[in-house]
Image (tube, rainbow, N blue to C red; front, side, top):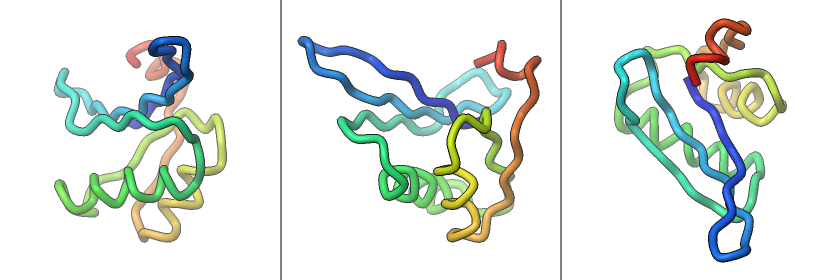
Length: 88
């Protein structure tokens, strides 16, 4: 499951993206000032390099970045339901 949140550090806005499946630990975190499709691409590409592409990327469906990126990288993408949103 991939989720992102906006955080403020010293008055500046950053985006925190993280990946956490149901194993109760973070496998990869990324903090950046921008929120773009290229940043999403490099984040998921690093996930694929670390863990392979046999996994399905699950997101909340908030934006189209993840869906398009998974198509580019040929990784399965799924949108998780409301119950799983509460887990994140």
